[in-house]
Length: 165
Image (cartoon, rainbow, N blue to C red):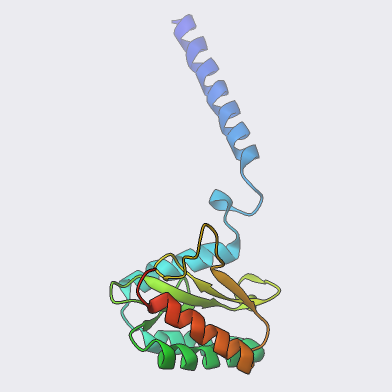
């Protein structure tokens, strides 16, 4: 009996030690290594999957952005709607995004303030037909949106939604 009790105590000590070692390996950013901003984005994504509000929610997210980023996001929305009208506006992880007929996000806009980054980003997912050789860009930093950038974005969108190469 004493031996069984000692074995149980020893097993509890080993489990506590293993748990402490596992906890020590976790980053200080929080549960499962995600930052507070990343956890918030994951919660937004779960809510989005339950919602079908599309463009209305996208425009609401844009309206919440700081002024310089809001202006870029609004202009980007106009460019995407005019250049790729078959893409459906929606939100994706709380960001403005545009999905193809299969519901897969082709491109998205991540404003700098959302994740406390230095610049906003126009990104493309693997459903975009941008493949070129063995390596190609899928994200573009945006600090301003002038005529040259608008032309480049239109060209990228035409490629992204065009037939796969």
